[in-house]
Image 1: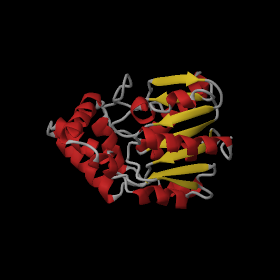
Image 2 (image 1 turned 135 degrees about the vertical axis):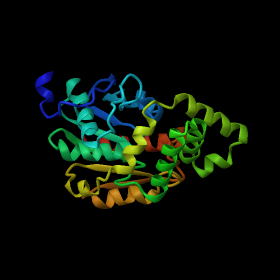
Image 3 (image 1 turned 90 degrees about the vertical axis):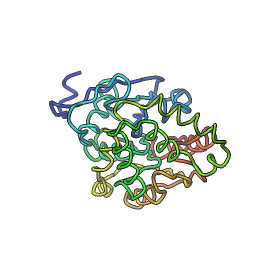
Image 4 (image 1 turned 135 degrees about the horizontal axis):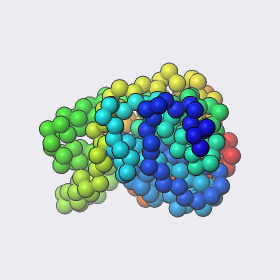
Length: 269
């Protein structure tokens, strides 16, 4: 559908896309160093029962190639929107997680005729001191080839205090192993983008129903980063996931799903 891509720059990213289900469209925007399955795998089948779930992979994830130039937020937001349009959906709700929240916000302000609602989880408009420091450490460790250290930093940042206190040292090492095995090629590029992006100026221009979910046990993105997003978007609803970590576990994701389903049935319907 080339005619639908007139808004895209000539250097746009061609994203690998997973599509499942049927019904109103939900466009997913995943986090840095993650992917659709890693961020949303626990709820994909449930959401696909009554929605078309469109899950694009960022550059350097899955089969999406990583460009030579640093990632550009506008281009990434455009490519995300193009992925939905190419699959026959001219309007959709965007569900963004972590970095994906900033991508979703930018998509909403660049393509207001297409984005009908936003769900933003563990999000930030600009990197707070904790996230900014972690992104710099990940960049330095990655450039030094210390990939297990990158995986350890990511794992410890994504786990909540509640999760960590229930784990043995062997459990932690198993999580680090899993992160290391699943770490996509684009991880450093994603975190480098985090150090540059700033969508604070976009917040006041968002004109769609918005749900902001705050995992209060997040140790990678300070919970107040999400609260500032909610404060900056007129009419945004804010819900808390008590004790939830940056990457929601099964119990916390079930609570998140309840909030999201109520939102989709109401203002976002």
